[in-house]
Image 1 (tube, rainbow, N blue to C red):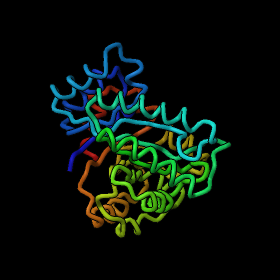
Image 2: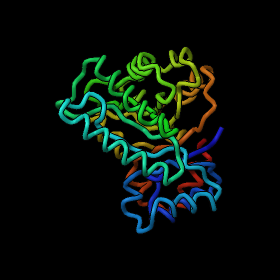
Image 3: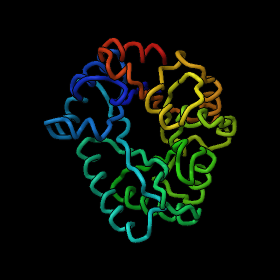
Image 4: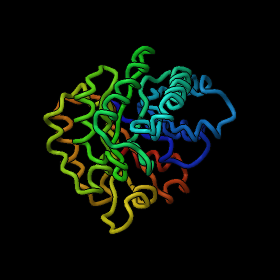
Length: 261
């Protein structure tokens, strides 16, 4: 299995992060859009830099607040998606993370969510790209992996699959055991993060207190076991939001991250 890490997990410029990730021995990297926005060069240059460093770009993220948007915004959001697809093709990655809608006015009717994501997957598939749908623990209507699987299953499109994240599962006391019943080829990506158990707002908890596996209190073996039983053999990626990590030297931090996997 490929070992990957998100650029948001480390400090420094995008080139510094990539060099640290490669030096640590990772196989791949998740590119956060903000890292590209603050980089002076082009996505094609990042694609070449990753190739030179022996890194696959495993994922581009995020694409926010799409499914269940107000109907007058759907066309605009599809245009926004096409621009993301352009960027992905420049980067040379085929997978984008679509996180569940958090907007206060998001629509929650299941058929709307199924139809919207099916439409997005149709657009992506036409360009040989894939959509990974992830439940944010604070999602407006979708915040559990079971809901994601229900929607992905009903949409029934080869370019649409699930992204599973240990933090989003455990922070709301979710049970990952049922993932073993999901077809492995519908799990597109797996993100790993540990955390201390804290009684606080889940968004703030996620944004500031994630840590590498083994540094917190989540039962990560129990999260990963049903995923492997399902037949998933794709990347295992670290997605760590932590103020201390973002201030630490990137090379040492990346090395610690690889050891945690």
